[in-house]
Image (tube, rainbow, N blue to C red):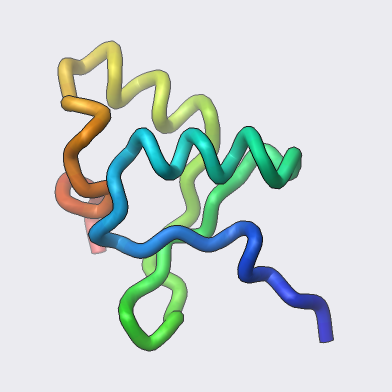
Length: 68
């Protein structure tokens, strides 16, 4: 089984941390998970760019504005 932990960020982590995750893993994606490591959503560079353009603060929690 493939270890995906390097792709994961917590729903309470900041968008800034998701950017760092995407940059570090070179997969172009972050997997947003809950405390039980269940997948809530995926985030890519385009999603984050649209967030920043729309005025969402990069220090806000990643999942705070995403549909569940």
